[in-house]
Image (cartoon, rainbow, N blue to C red; front, side, top):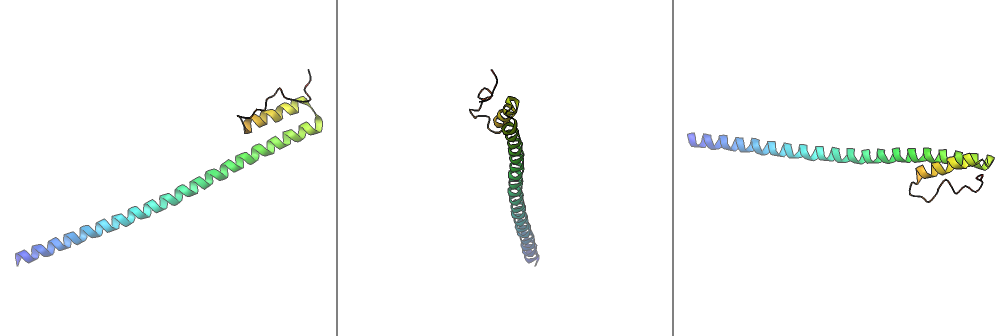
Length: 103
């Protein structure tokens, strides 16, 4: 009888270990799922932030360009070219290419 009680205790302990392993596996799966979703949302948020910054830069560039078109002032053109360099630093736009610059 003592042998069957030991077998019964062993069965219970193995069932508890298996249950703990299953619960742990489900928990790990749930955490990975939540982290994956959080990472995707974070990436989307970064895209929204970049688009908002780019929109602001485009608005500033447009206002500088309108100022140049209205006044034909070389300083206005310099602001446009500086804004372009900020938007596209690898661009070939330089500050010496002003068509209305004074000698």
